[in-house]
Image 1 (cartoon, one colour):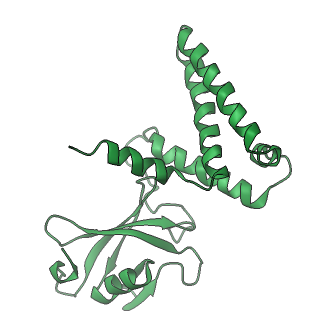
Image 2: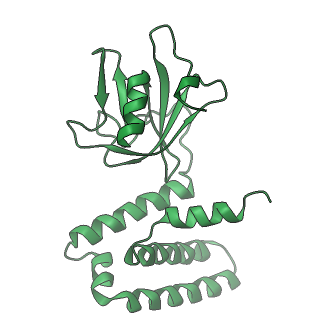
Length: 206
């Protein structure tokens, strides 16, 4: 499919769902005309159409909260578009990460992927800013070998916890292991997306 297949409404617009490409979180629902779709593909950053201002606009043009396009998809009827993006800042004009922050049903536990993405971004922030007292900054200063040693230590704690009765200790130790694994990825300038790509390739139907 391509842009010639998009089914626009009578105003020449199509709804756009914007999703965090790493966590899968839905960030917002907006609108685009063909020019906005073309600009998004051309620049690799989110462009939309404002119905209230009747004009094309680039997400983050004034706020700095731009979104890098990873993938654009059409739905089965080609009358809705999905932008999968890497957001650089909040998606909502209120300052919230996602526009969908008003629960109607009781809030569910956040999915693991979403939580790991938040932890990953915090690790990256700590490595950029190296704040005093930060555990991440301290481990980074100690060097990669120290971080790798923690992987071995935490893996051992997981083994012990898994052999003990109950699950609270196992959940705690497994979380420590995941955290330090993310730190290793950051130290090697990798990201969870690299793991997702490999796992996805492995589990594709043969």
